Image (spheres, helix red, strand yellow):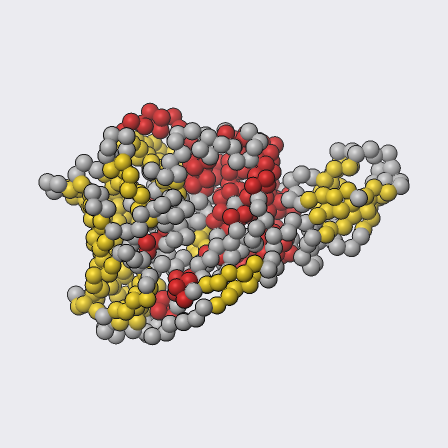
Length: 539
């Protein structure tokens, strides 16, 4: 057995933040030898859900390509769920477990280039979500009519909280069939396209097929007494089906609120490029929690109102112009589902860009000033508690500041690019060049630097790897000479800064050394451009 067996300490040196991690963190968060030798090709998740007992039973068929010859394979499944047996070619295999990680001893020789399958049979009462989606699992609720209202959510916690899989983000399955048997009076909605419904006297089995690569936390099950309606959006790649599944008594409210869906498609296809999953369509599905970005099956629970449960997170007023959950979670189709981080430490790639997408939605529909007011207003929520980037190889995400700080970082870079045509090309290029890929933050950072023609490395180091915000210090001297510098910055930080002298733009190039710049001797006002995420201090 190639276990890594130790307790270690990770130091994020830029901030002095420390945290202990366990062997389980390593087994979950690293590309272990028992994961590295095989590449996911196909899943068939086939389960029966018993709502009255809060019990699931079934199997997951895992098809994989052999990359190099090994005989031990890691599958993940979290207690209290239990693996009943694992088979290959109909023969039961031995396996050993280390809590969430299960190591299957393969008997069939694994030859490089071959495609093989194992079938993992499992059952039990999965972890019940305490505060979904932040503390996820299965949400077992009832609707106003006393009908079962059930959904899964598992970001961070891991998909292995409710089904056995290769629970690491670096390897996405190429396609997937999701078969869910439920009581006959209920409907299951999952990712992708509905292929067929099999019916017996007491049950219905819904078979959903996902024809695109999908990250495992994006897979979902939603079970309720749903009613369906839909429409077709004429997008950049042709007709795109927009399907909506809601509780029957919310149908009219949903028809009104979900009018924002074509609006978001219009805005995001403009800024980010074509919706990444035309083959699988787009769905909004009502759930008993706030919502999540499940790929092609975005879940919704924002009570059919604008804002975030009726609140404007920016305090600007613009946050009440859109339904936060519809816009934010759908934005994840481009950043999280199309472009997916390889390691949870880089979660800012999901959340920073998607938080920024709210700003671009406003920009498209309400104008640039509205977008600026909104994203700048979000700064009030930044805590500066930890760096945005977490610790690698242990399934550890960074600070929640990845949302608001991430969006303001990107808004600042837009100012540095200083050309919205180029900025839009960069955003669309990201989704084209990293289409259906898993990425590292280095790839994204390098791409933005290369395509913008700017060396942004120190900018990323400052905003992603420290908790410090640059301070622009300045004073006006006789003859309208501006004396200025940066403090509270990483070594080598020299981000250009736009200021306004009597309303006229002037670019400065501050460093940690004092510099001077002559301005119009008749000028009476000096202002730092608010769109740059810096603090200012007049001496």
